[in-house]
Length: 320
Image (cartoon, rainbow, N blue to C red; front, top):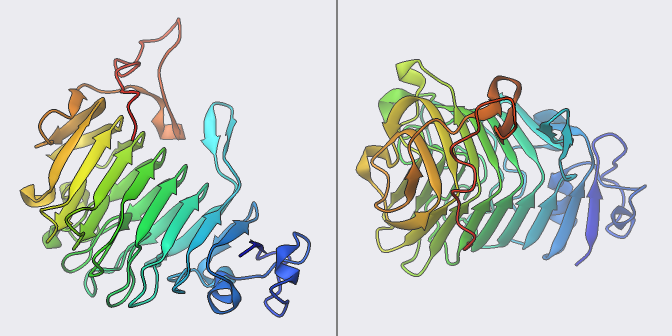
């Protein structure tokens, strides 16, 4: 178990495991870590844009090993939260999922995921951070301080979503917090499976924690609007906790895809143009007034010369 560095610019997969632990001699691809890394490694990415060709992005983490995948923490530039570690799928359908039959623990932080497009058909695991082909899934998962931007999220059937699990009977809790989800759309409206969060077959004692996320959905074309924020299939005994999430949608659509969902609890959330939310979790249904979402500034308005966001200070401090 060690800190492993990966850089598409200066990396070389011919280097040894020991060499990759030195920042000046990193590996080049996540595929190399799959075959040569150790369970429990911290995988430190550089401030670079990683693409499908340069880092083998498709199902980038596939080994049956525990891991922590880190980018460089974002900073604010002219009021805009800006990431420098970027995964650009270039409008392909790639994801980060464990191998079939495996249940690793995963932590993913500080990465900007953008330009993902799911196919209009095929499998239920054609989405971003997810279980992979067959019966593979995360035992536990934390995704934090990431930005999911410009995603088209549908598949033929029980798929879709930026973060989800498929077929794998997740064993432990998932924590999804302090992320941005912006311009997430449906790539296949007829399927009714375009969502942001999608999990399948969670065990009865599992809890899906989602808190402190900002969601901005400006889509107005009916066929491109999501079918739901959340769907959980064959997991009715599971629960999720939904707290301090702020959603702006330009078009009304339901929280649960087709009304399907587990028992939800939470508080301090803003749901603008979202219907059918779990009982007791909505604190506000008006426009949260992001500062400048067209320029990706998703802070809430709070100054002396503008209208103050009604969402200021409505959240709960009881987390997760």
